[in-house]
Image: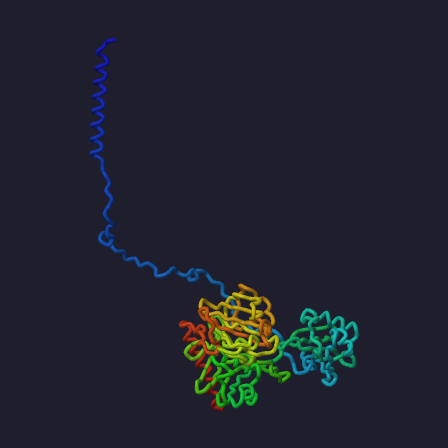
Length: 468
C-alpha cells in the first residue's frame, strides 16, 4: 500500500471539518432570534372599535320558551291548621243536628266524669250505651285521642241511643279541640276533631302602687300570669325588694285569649308594652320580633331590657343577708360576706343568671352544693347551699339565662334554706345588688326601621285605649 495515502486522507478530513464549522457559523449568524416584547401593546390604538353592543344580562330562557297556561292559583299564605276542622258547638245536640239532620233534646244529654281507673268504654256503658256500641266507639276514636292519658275528672257529655234517634258523645282533648263521636243512620260511628272558638282580647291596665305591687295589681284585676311576666321583664332593671315605693306606677298592654264556649280565660298570649315609673324614672319597653322570629323587649332606642346577668336569680324570695361585713351566724365572728342571701322555701327553683358554661358543679366546703357559671372572660356567678341540681346540670354543660339549674336548700354551713348568690368580676366578688349589669344585645342596625314601625304600632294602640 502506498504510504502517501494516509496524509492525503488526513488532509481531506481537516478540510471537511473546516468546511462544516464554517457552515454552522453561517447558519447561526443568519438565524432569526425571537425577542420577548417589552409589554402588551395597547389594543385601543390598533384595533377599530366595534359597533356591536353586548347584552347587559343573560336573557331569561322563559322569555323564548313556550309556556303552558294553568288555572291553578297558588295560596296567598300558609293556611291555619285549625281551618280544616269544623268549629265546636255550644251543645252536643247542635253538632248532632249539623252532622245528621236529626233533632234531639238537649235535656237528655248526660254529663259524666271519668273516674279513677275507668276508661271510655265503661263510662259509655254507664251512660246508657250497650257493650257493642261502647267497644266500636273506642275503636273509632283511638286514633284521634290518646285514651291512655285521659285525666281523672274529665267531663264527657253523652247522648245515649236508648230512647233517642241516635247516639253521640264529646269531650275536650285540649284547649283548642273537642272530640266528637256520632252514630249515623246506619249505626256506624263517625268520629272527628272540632276546633274550639277562641276570642283574642287586647287590654291596657294601669295602676298605682300603694303597699305592694302584688296587691295593687289585684286591685285593678291584672291577671297573675301577666304580673309574673311583667316582674320578670322589669326584674333586669329594678330590684323589687328595695326600689319599689308607694306612689310608683305601672302600665301594661297585653293580649289574652278566651274560650267562647265556656266563656273562660285561657291565658296570656303576649305583653306588647310594659311601663314602670320608679321614683320618677320611667322604664318603657316594647315587644319586638326580629327577622328570625325571636322576640325580645327593648326601649324606644332599641336597647335590650334584658341584661346579660340577673340581679336576683330566684322568684318570690326575700333578701335575708346583704353584701359586706357581718357576724357569721355559725362561726360567731365578724367576716366579709362576699355575696347576698335570699331566703326561700326548700325546693324553690334557682335560675342561671345569664348564658354561660358550668365551670364547677359539686360540693365545696362551707358552700355545700355549689354551682359556678362562667359567662365570659370577665363575669362569673356562683350559687351555694343548694338542695340539689336540675337535670342535665354537670361540669362543662352550657346553660341559658333563666334556665333552672338547682333548688334552694341548706347544705354546707347554713342555718336554714336560702340561696347564697355571688357575682364575680375579673376574679373578685362584687355586690350583686349594686353592680352595674352589662346590657344585652340591642336591635341590629339593619332592623331599626322595622323595629320603629313595630313601636309606632304599639303607641297607636295605647293612644286608642286612652281615648276610651
